[in-house]
Length: 433
Image 1 (tube, rainbow, N blue to C red):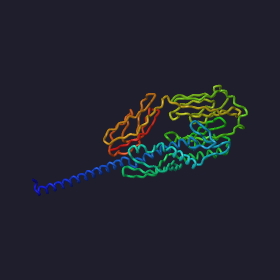
Image 2: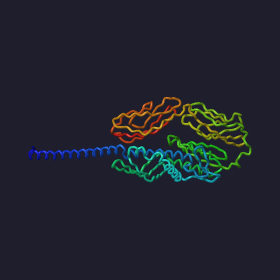
Image 3: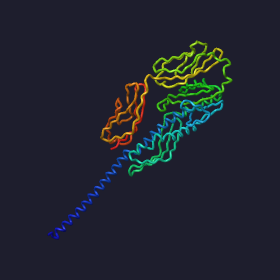
């Protein structure tokens, strides 16, 4: 039989146990909440505003370069107005059409680039899927883009983003990219060319262009086509867009029915398109019958001899298709233009880098990924990366252990190169704890 004092002791012990248990539950809950907060903080650190800003800046850079390249191939237009002429993959506007000038203002070109970026950047952003896969909520506002083409090309994207990471809410709004391209200088060259052309709208300003190209450090090509159409290509190799020389193209349509020579040149030779290989002697005789003609070219690839011989050794920078125009004259001053396509090839077939899927690496764990590339020639391939996280091996293997300080989102460019040709791609790598 228990005594009253013993019962009191048990009651006291029970109360103590109750408080201890409650304390433990409270402590465990607090620890769990603290751990959750810590995990959320780590996640917020891993997927910070900087990561999403870097990704958006990257998409702006890519799309801006695509816009500059494409719009310039179409005479400063994304949506080309009439009058214009369809070419391969592009539509080229007529800056002069039977003497009437159709030359866009610099602001018009800026607006056309803005239209391109607004249309194309969503494909790069891909609704921020790379982040949403990690449980991050991102709400997008209305996009606006402002392009300023001056001594540099400035692209300002306004894109309100509301980013929810756990209980953290981050807002972003402005994204910028500057392209090293002095469009103010380029537009001045175009404007002066148009002004010169306007003086004699039914003549090609060949002499002026030759002088201007020498003084302003650019090359030009003129492609004489049917129906009195000439396509002008201005090549600025001091500026790189998408790792290619910056090219600006426009066309002019003339009425040369009254300017045709009264006596046609007796040129019976059939002119065919040609192809040459880098490093090999490229030779073409446009005067196999030894007629008494003099020849003049309008390309920076070579200098045709006065008697019609073309001979040069193409370099790697010349790879691609070139429209070659040549003017012939006889002793009486009659002249005729001939055109052909010249393709510069490499004996080496191009390689192709396989698409790299989004990747996740973890701190203190080995990350391994093999970059795949297809090369029909089986050449020795060298890989390059632009990150300090790792050094990709010569067979395309990425192997490294991530550290705490590298937690976050990384955009890494991978390039494969076989000695002559290369191909590149992007790796979106997320490092988590």
